[in-house]
Amino acid sequence: MPEAQFKNELTDEIKVSPAAAEQMLTIMNSEEGINGIRIFVSGGGCSGMTYGMTFVDRPSDFDAVLKKDDVNIYIDAVALGFLEGVEIDYQTEGLNQSFVFKNVFASTGGGNSCGGCGSAGH
Image (cartoon, rainbow, N blue to C red):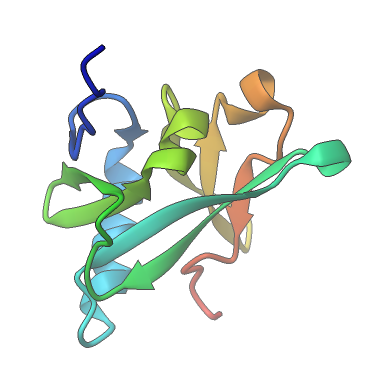
């Protein structure tokens, strides 16, 4: 049986809204030595999955890369299984600004926002 090929370049498995891409680029440009943003999944069990983002200076050997405008988004192979079909958006409601993972909650039972990730004033 042939070994499954790891897909290291993503196209439309994960959607990133223009507002989210613009905010990611703004955040990346404000930090020195940042090559991209890693999206990760943690948790499980009774509390469900939690989704978040962090800055990275380079991808790991297990990251798939999604290029959106001028932003490199890195997602490791395990997280990709939980994120396929998701749209990442950036929303402003009053004073609250956050990245939101749409359609994740319905499919996995986890949290669906990343409040404070790159929000202005934080």
